[in-house]
Length: 128
Image 1 (cartoon, rainbow, N blue to C red):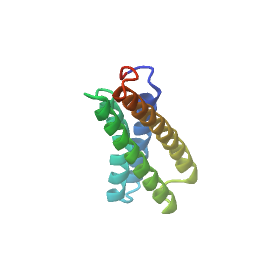
Image 2 (image 1 turned 30 degrees about the horizontal axis):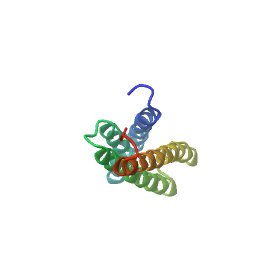
Image 3 (image 1 turned 90 degrees about the horizontal axis):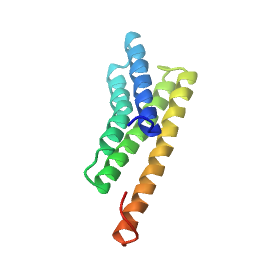
């Protein structure tokens, strides 16, 4: 899926999350919490990737909705990590900015897919 902004951004975001979680673990801090951030932060890209190979438009929308939920969860954990000083404000700002961009792209993709699905059901053209 080379050239797909959402796929590329979600992958680089997952790499950033893995690196951040590794750094926190090396400081021997919050292993249970680190696992939560690691799971949600890497799940975004996994669900986007899976959605791009969905068996139907509904399946695509479902996978992207799951990715969006994981994005919101990741933003929660990032805020908590900043508040308890597991990450700096600069680290938070960087990761939150990427997450925010992912969230906006996911919302736009879901809205477009929903509109296309509704149009195809009304007979207004093929479902891409």
